[in-house]
Image 1 (tube, rainbow, N blue to C red):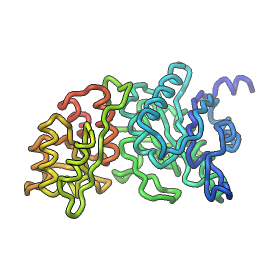
Image 2 (image 1 turned 30 degrees about the vertical axis):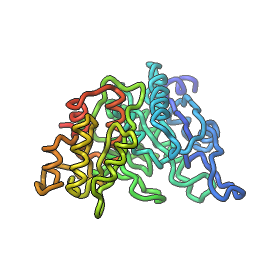
Image 3 (image 1 turned 60 degrees about the vertical axis):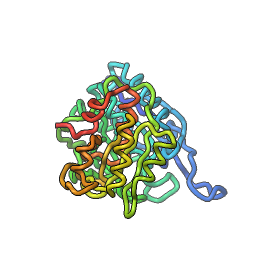
Length: 334
């Protein structure tokens, strides 16, 4: 029995809070953080048979409260855990509100071959069908699996394994809220095991930032959105801007005018699509079309969502990257 325990892979689990750690407080009128990491592990029967768990409890913070400094601090905790050469991988447990941003941020900085798996829950512990224990077991299973080595940061919820740069939360409350924007998850995980295909090339920030750059604002292009919102962002102190464009990268021409003024002043402006899937590109050449944005010098964010493009720009600026390096960072990897 001791030998079997010794042969189990070791996985560090970093607990940060989120819906998975919450129960309903009738006096407060809703779910609030209550469960610590040790309590969550005790409520996930069978997890000790998957791996030897190294629990790291960082409190119970709703993901909507996270700052970039928090994301970098948790990244530091990931790196500290991976200093143990006997560790198979790391799981980060957090709220789902900003998971597609945090996971992508850690992926940009993750250079170790061992996987980091991010998970949480869509239902709190007071609700019927609480998905927390199953997601926690699944995340540990993936983190311990040899096929996950070299895959960077992965997201595991609802039985899906999704690359951090491909993940999207497409529903506010459904159990299957997290999907692959490309249409096909990297793999599946269940009580019977893990199926995982190789992941393609990833973006990297080098050197990894120790502080966040910015601030970086997002300006959403919509009906009658001209350049005034971007002008206000610059006047308010933004050191970078992401434009969430319509379609494949199209906006009102005055929004491009404001972006051109900002870029002339040395402030990088990235162009992403607000649609949630598919790349921006030089497909339309009318004033404000994607081709005119590219010619003006905007950083084309490829298939990244606006919130992910913002993370890349914040981390790139924090790392001191120049314009050409930022351009390469945001572009879809070949």
